[in-house]
Length: 339
Length: 289
Image (cartoon, one colour):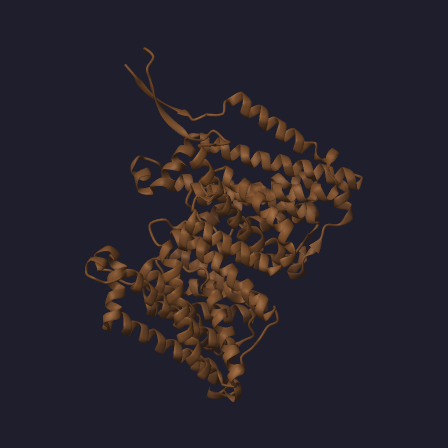
């Protein structure tokens, strides 16, 4: 008698994959030894964007929550970092997870309101929430009001005494954070919630009728995303050392770029945002002189990809070669062994 | 007290403009379930086209509108036929992402051509004309005109939707696109006509926006948000509700701005979120049989 069971598709072999991953992480972690200051800055920026794009992908690609207002949580995290360090004297590196936790708490009432809006309207609703945060931040005169403020030297030096140590430390925190984000997403997708998410993504009504509490799953994903997005936001502005409402809540920087990366790389797949971020930065390093034309080009590429190859670059590769970097695909196996 | 009446009157008049922003958005959503994130940027595009028409031909804003409205309508038709029709379907992502991309393209295109300087469309003496309606309360001719145009526009759209063959086709496609197709209508054409109508409305809104205040390439998203708030507060699917939603938004902003200039936009958003919390179906929902 054969017993059907579900297992994860794992073509490349677990050991080999883990070994490769370990090598990549080790090389990246050793970047302070082989890279200059500019390399470190660029890499940290790439990590931040990989994190943001992966989180947006979790929201839009898996949970079907298309948000154009994730800058709300980038900005909130950044402002919380400044508030916690400046007003409450919290050490900067401790303020990062704290900012994430507070942002998740703030995200709960926002979710309750936003989840009353369906589909498209949810998207614009998220934007309004981000605008409300931005306008409130420009009213907060202790944090510089509309013109913003810089992180005082005392707080900066409290991270580490020398500039080099600070840069190394922030780089490692950025790497650790993006790895944490990816790990959480992979773990989430491999859990029962992941299965529920994929069911919701493929057919919400069918998922509901199979007993999945669609609303609860979506709220959880929204809160997890807010938590992690705010941590990344805090880290980004710990590197920038200067904050203003327009920079912290920029829809272009924290949402448009992130969406373009995810769409170009391949939405609804975990590898997509990573590939997309790579393409984005490769283009930016070569075309940045074009200024606004660069954004025009990026928008056009994203539209063409969405219309012509909606699964993105990684979708094309994965369909053709059957590759997957992260073992997430499940398959039903008919076990022929005797019970 | 008189001050507050004045504030509310001005808010109501601005609400007409917001209803204009909202009408085109509401029309498109009603007919093809498409939320056009580039809507606000298209309003700004219309404002720039009016500016170019007025400057090169040496004409006023209203004659310029006679050029810009058909032009925007044409842009709408072509945009729908070539791009947006391909995004329609059960999946929410393609229309959202494509119009989001369009929004970024229009904004940066305008920035590239016209720079970030803020512009204004000169309308001559009507800009400063006003007439007193009561002791201490005067109504500007221009705000009043834009309000009346908004009311006329909504009446006109209502007429087109419920009294003409085109409107019947729109409503049929909205109810069931497949059956409409079976009845011999071409949905692609109907949707393109709906987008053309929406962008003609956008052109009117753009011209009034351009005359009323300074504009620059970056202000589109805020117009989209104001229009969206008016649609949701008014109640989905109701054009007259949209007008009332616009008025509620205009008054909320005027009162907020009177208390503290920094609170103007914020007050509008907060009233919107409040309405969403207590009456998610909107203030004046369309009653469905």
